[in-house]
Length: 129
Image (cartoon, rainbow, N blue to C red; front, side, top):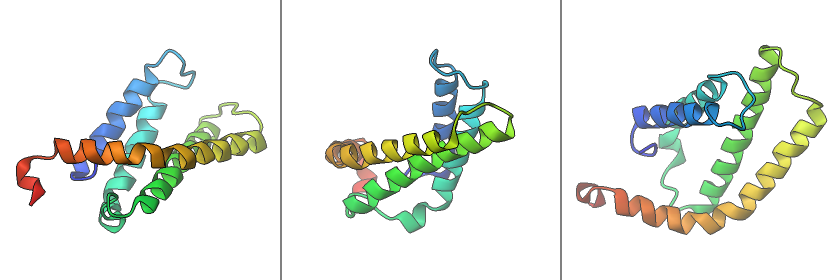
């Protein structure tokens, strides 16, 4: 949905953020993740034409997801600084972001074929032309 529709990307970002905000393991202010993922959904929807079709360029997909998740975590840290939260040592935080990016680089290629099949399965028959 986020690949085909601008409103879908923003709505999925907001819904995902609300779910993350309501998670028992989240200790951030209510609405922080909703704001962050809505911003990321908006940015994704604004740039979706330049991204292209990921099923044809799997390396671009892996790099886009890695950069997107790392950017989301950096926004989380910056918003925490703006809100006056104690996020801990910045060097440790960037080490965690780098480690997260490394894991995404390793596991995204494994998940990509299944996601591509699921996406093609869920598209309407009129979109398969």
